Amino acid sequence: MTDEAEILFALVSRRYGARLDSAQLDEVKEVVEAIARDAAALRAAVIVDGDEPAQPFVPFRAEP
Amino acid sequence: MSAFRTIRELGADIRAGRLSPVALAESCMERLETVGRALNAVVTVTRARALEQARRAERELAAGYDRGPLHGIPYGVKDLLATGGGIPTTWGAAPFRDRCFDEDATVIRRLEDVGAVLVAKLAMVELAGGMGYRQPSASFTGPGISPWGAEAWSGGSSSGSGSAVGAGLVPFAIGSETWGSILGPATYCSVSGLRPTYGRVSRHGAMALCWTLDKLGPLALTADDCGVVLEAIAGRDPRDPTSADRAYRYDAPDTERHFRFALVRGSVDAAQPAVAGAVADAIDNLRAIGTVEEITLPERPYEAVARVILWAEAASAFEPLIESGAIAGLTAPEDRFTAYARDTILAKDYLRALRLRGVVAREIDGVLSRFDAIVGPSRGTAGPRLGVEFRSAIRGSFPDVLGAIGNAAGLPAIGVPCGFTADGFPVGLQFMGRAWEENVVLAAARAWQARTDWHLRRPPM
Image (cartoon, rainbow over all chains, first blue to last red; front, side):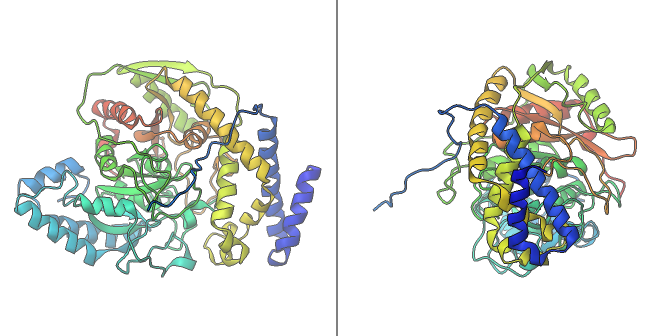
């Protein structure tokens, strides 16, 4: 487990640990590690400044 | 009398006076209550509403008022589409089993406008799989069962939509796909399933799992029927700002066309061997209607892009349910807690996924500009058994590059039956096209179905 994943798992554990038993915490840890692997894959991909997020935002103005 | 008959066949019988819409609706509802319940495919049979709509269709058609090919045709919807009139909308989740909305989703309203008859709200994986389920028993109505085997999973999350069509309980159903939820059940239930371009169909009134990935689309016995339904439900809706202002007309006439197909190198071999064999045979047969060129895609973290977007948006969409701990009331044990891990998705990583998504969309459109469709397995696995953990790209336990690209880039795809494994489980072939090119993938699927009979095989029920 990377340092980052360890720290992020500690956050989850602190927030929700009281609701979880040890087997559930282990499974949550596996999911955190999977999320960290995906994040690493994304961070390794090359993008440039002009690559904007692909999402629609349209300013709103109520019509009279 | 009416089971396993296409929309066009039923419509011809209705117009010829050989079949009454009321009798047709009654027949479907009787089978939904018996066969449908046995397959765990049904949440609610909407009897009163169905009979009212069927009687109206009968009156109108008798009076010469014809609303088109869906007039008097029964259908079911995945139970994540809101229905008014006191009909519950459960999202497949026990905490919402009695919840009702005040009005119909746009898709249901549009189908009512063309005279279709809503006979059932169909079962689904709880919260459309948004909590990360990993085995079929993840709905308060029980695990969806494929008509092709008492121990075979129907697929998810549009479980009831797949098995109800596959068992001949309704001629078509509406499902939703965020990643694999139309093509998966279409494959496992051996029916045709169309995932439209993102924005083609209004999501207003549909449960939000992931705002930028969710799509609604039809499952039916044939690709042609999928096109008929898509025309009825497509179009701009002011209540869904992501719905596109693009008119859609289904281009139904068959033409002798020579297709240009692309096959992503390695995409067939990545499937289970039993699936890969059937799909490889199917792709060989496609050469009768076009060319098949093997291609290599740019190296991109396609699955990571789709997963991070999906999990981050789902964490937000279901934040009250997760934060409150109400997920503890869900059916699948894993759905009761694994979503807590999503607090670790960083905003910058989500935004990076959205930025890469734009890059992927442009690159894949460049690839597709030379072809009519990319072909490949509509599902890399076959016949998951009830009670057994399945492998899934959404959880990262099985590859699905085409699914990741198609959903992240919002591209249309249709899955159609293309064979069976040695154990008798259905296998599917997908055609994925450029954005807004549903008519092209539908034409390819129609050409495939004109030359094969996989879609005509019926389950041993």
